Image (cartoon, rainbow, N blue to C red; front, side, top):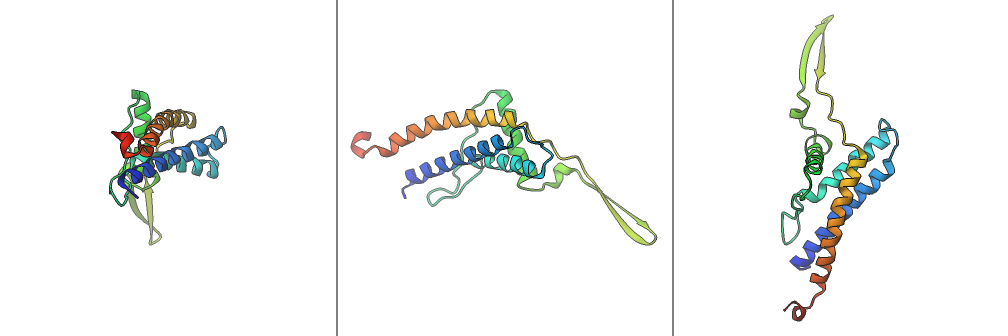
Amino acid sequence: MTEQEEAYVHFVDCMECLDRAWTLLKSVGGADPKSPLMSAAHELALIEYAKPFKASEGEHSRRYKWPEPKLPEKDMELHNKIIRLRDKVLAHSDLTVKEAQLYVSQSEGKPIMTVISNIREQLPPVDEVVALIEHLLRDAYEELQRRDYELAMTPEQAR
């Protein structure tokens, strides 16, 4: 596979991640957010959303990654929140976010360990993330069409 072909495959894979995130969120819809399955689907959708913006290794490049999107301020805040949630809470368990404290005591000669931590950050509303994904996918489909033509061109056509 050429470098250009590999970049194309990475781009399409990123679009598929966003599509999976969209599909998961649409299936969650108005379901009870306290349901373990719905909560898990919501979390997985956010992880899928973040994949295009995280480094991916290939044969020709070790750092395939979508650039930060150009979004209105509100959407950019949501995008950054999703990336932070993925990095600090969903795909990893960052103790700094939890600000945990350990309390050690004894009762009747037996140790009692108590961990107190922050309440986990709330997941963003499904409808807002769906709208953000749809915005990104609209732009991505335009870019994909450009890449389709670019990849299909013969060297003579490119001149």
